[in-house]
Picture 1 (tube, rainbow, N blue to C red):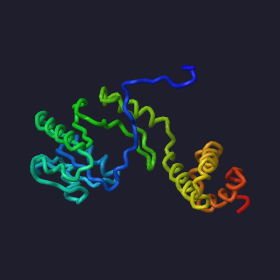
Picture 2 (spheres, helix red, strand yellow; picture 1 turned 90 degrees about the horizontal axis):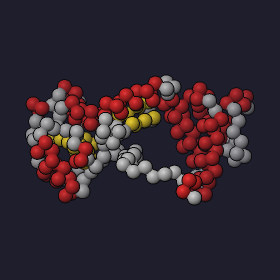
Picture 3 (spheres, one colour; picture 1 turned 135 degrees about the horizontal axis):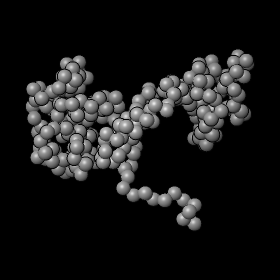
Picture 4 (cartoon, rainbow, N blue to C red; picture 1 turned 120 degrees about the horizontal axis):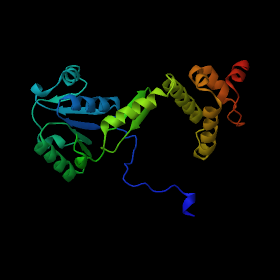
Length: 236
């Protein structure tokens, strides 16, 4: 019986796509590591506050402050900075101060990442490849960040350059499908039909698909048929 199901492999992380849009992320520190954390948070549409003396800001963080991309508090961290924070990213070269931030976050039940201190992290940052809506993350669970970067580059080298554009179009098609078939009970049929489109159409077809093609393809949803792109265009 046990062979019918996947074995449990302990020691991993629960890798999820954390939605931080419009949430408040506090970054403690303003150096190179903090700059990377800030960019990740901004890419996820978070509201970012950076707590660090202006003298400690590196060129990239100073640029984001000057451009108004983040809110800057020009001083060292204080416990009151945690008020209203949904997440804390700490990247300072002071182990004692970092541990204090970690302990305060635990008291307030705020998820936190203390850079380069795996035991003081609720989550880790992996090595990420980005192409539009496509994000691929490789994690070593804090054991080998450089190796994660090497693996990520190998994976990225195997992906087509236009994968992001194809995913954008699939997302638009999926949204249009929900508009014409909004009922919850149609969920399984929608999923099966969309899967069929992704499996039967080539990547180039998905990239080339325009609004007229989508409308023509959606006309076949009710029947469950999935015509080829050239068939869709022939009937337009």
